[in-house]
Amino acid sequence: MKLSKDVMKDMYLRMRRIREFETKAQNLFAEGRIPGFVHLYIGEEAVATGVCENLTDEDFITSTHRGHGHIVAKGGDLKFMMAELYGKATGYCKGKGGSMHIADRDKGILGANGIVGAGHNIAVGAGLSAQYRGTDQVCVCFFGDASTNQGTFHESMNMAAVWKLPIVFVCENNNYGISMSQDRHMAIKDVADRGAAYGIPGVAVDGNDVLAVHEAAEEAIARARKGQGPTLLECKTYRHRGHFEGDAGAYKPTEEQAAWIKKDPLPRFAEFLKENKIFTEKEIAKLDEQVAEEIAEAIKFAEESPDPELESVVQDIYSDIVEEVRVR
Ligand SMILES: Cc1ncc(C[n+]2csc(CCOP(=O)(O)OP(=O)(O)O)c2C)c(N)n1
Ligand SMILES: [Mg+2]
Image (tube, rainbow, N blue to C red; front, side, top):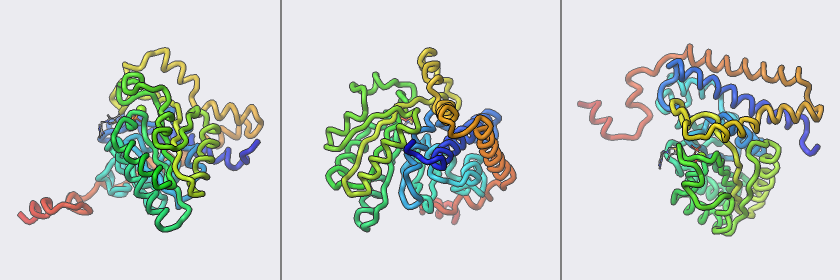
């Protein structure tokens, strides 16, 4: 076995943490405790986990509207995340950003992003900055299949390739852009093929197999660190939920859903760990318990935190107009 037991354990914990955070967020949203929009990552956990396992706090990631998984996998603070989802004053953005604006500079998390395709450009900036400063930092840019039809994707891939920037472009191909399936929004089967247009490697992997993702990401990240330039890594996966909570996802054929549920990355990895005698059923149950406690604590923290003060509505923002309104 190439990976150590510690790495396997860490990856299982990260995946389980994402799943637990998301499942609880799903329920809390349904109960009306979490306001705003929530886009869940359930079913896609192996991607963020397999990739981020290869990164340090010094490395960067850019994220998307479906960002909780990336942030959890990169070591974001569960309490501050949950408080932000609740809109509480103790959240990452003091309750003013919500699910789609979580960032943590100390962890190299350059932000979730409600604008589809905006993370690509930010990744180019981060990659250029690392190259200019002569560090060995890498930036991983996470994005969805549909965002690869945006101009920003093509512009960013081109500049990153020309300048050989230390970036790994990770496409989470979950077969949908909202309700539109991939065969209706692009004429190719593998997003990875788009790498060739920019002269960079394009690699497609089973995004529900955390070990396959880890291996492919390890190679792409090593390449970027050595100054050999970007890679496009396509991870084929599936979102179990609707596009956002509230979308029933009726456009997803029942058989398609059933087939992907069978390939659920979490039980699949648990099975692997048991079959290969890396962990026993009991040990896995213990890890699950540990994670359930962490998430319960995060929820408690969020529940007990205060709402933002009314005055905070005009704080930490860039706007002269608001200043004028306040003066009036
Ligand atoms: C510039 C822009 N255009 C459109 C939207 C509306 N929108 C939000 S998510 C989404 C689909 C994104 O699909 P994909 O990139 O595959 O990510 P997924 O939701 O599948 O993770 C769209 C069109 C947006 N937020 N920003
Ligand atoms: Mg998609």
